[in-house]
Image (cartoon, rainbow, N blue to C red; front, top):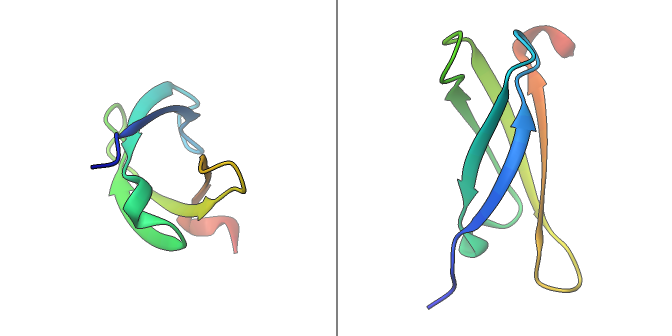
Length: 64
């Protein structure tokens, strides 16, 4: 059973540092989750790296 990976991100709206948990089985996924501080919707893009680690990119809804 793969372990959850802890990752620290900055909210693209309020700039607060937030710790999230990533599931290694969720590679190449996109989802939206509200910021724990300002409640704005954050777009998450999770991709797998060669060494089995996950990489996460966050953006705001208005960044397109």
